[in-house]
Length: 228
Image (cartoon, rainbow, N blue to C red; front, side, top):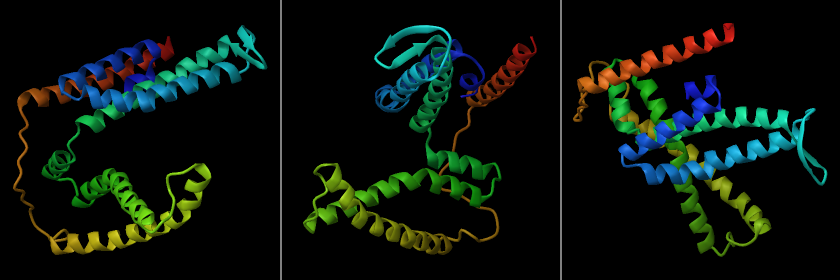
């Protein structure tokens, strides 16, 4: 992500290739690519086209109807799209490879606050949980005879009776989660234990240090290029 934000499209393409290689090494290449091309690739193409045709400039590449593609717009589009490509590819790789249970447990072992770890877990799980609740509500609406799979107007009409139960269910779920946390001793004082254990081999410790050094080198390199 840092390389994609600080450097041009050539570096970003290199980091994207590395993301694909890491996904393949972890056995996650297929799900990674399926999400990547539906989100990052399409978004980059849209950004590139819009910037090329709607950013004014003095050097015209070609014209079509009322639209004119400019060299200045193309350059800005490449720069903007490369940042989206670098950041988006890294985020998708993180989502595909990260195990939330292991990450939260690792944070707790490093003496981070349980409140922080719970906020991270709840934030990551909120979208899948709401999507699951939305599916249940839509099935219930269909069982009541409400049409939800027709054209855009019909779907918009069915959205109002669907969003209400979703909000109410989410509010009730917050109260249930609070009661569950209290019953499991979430606010209890003292040292916490876990039935799970995380192995932290020396190779992974070395990798974390190398990544930290790489981030520092990237920042220093960008500053040097700005000064020069």
